[in-house]
Length: 71
Image (cartoon, rainbow, N blue to C red; front, side, top):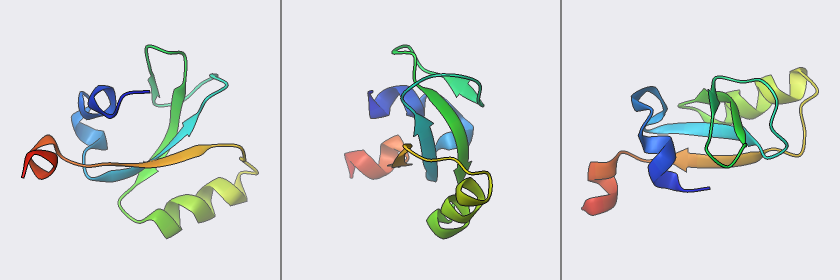
C-alpha cells in the first residue's frame, strides 16, 4: 500500500490510520483492496477504540502531510 494513496484523502493527513489488509467495510477502500477502518490524531486513542471493538491483525500507519514529507 502506498502512503501517497492515503494522502489523497485529506481527512487522513496527519492522522494515525488503521488498515485492514483483508478488506471489508470501512471509511475508505484502497486500490489494493485494503480498507481504512478507523483513524485518529492520537495513536493511543485509536488503539483503545480498536481494542474495544475486538479488532485485530490491523496495520497502523501515520499518514503525514505531503508537505511534511517533502521538508
